[in-house]
Image (cartoon, rainbow, N blue to C red):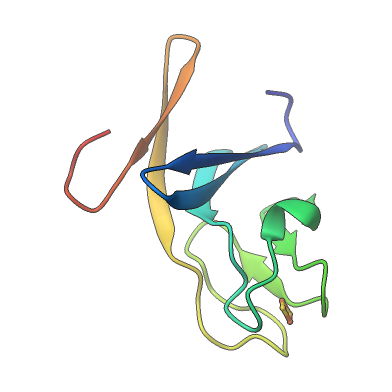
Length: 95
Ligand code: FES
């Protein structure tokens, strides 16, 4: 997965967007908090993901909504690289 790219994966009914940045891998929910657009159709710029529908920006490191019209943060997940796999930690504490 090249730096600057994203990958949408579905696990147990949840869509998660994995993002590879210069700061490492991050994982966030794939749904914009404004009007539920799929963020995998937006653009990753540095540590920001831009919503394809109305252009809100989110910080993928902590989920913060950086610009309107979004105001609520994205849910974030811990991501780590083990060998050639990317693992995402879900709520129950398992990768
Ligand atoms: S749906 Fe994402 S900014 Fe409106």
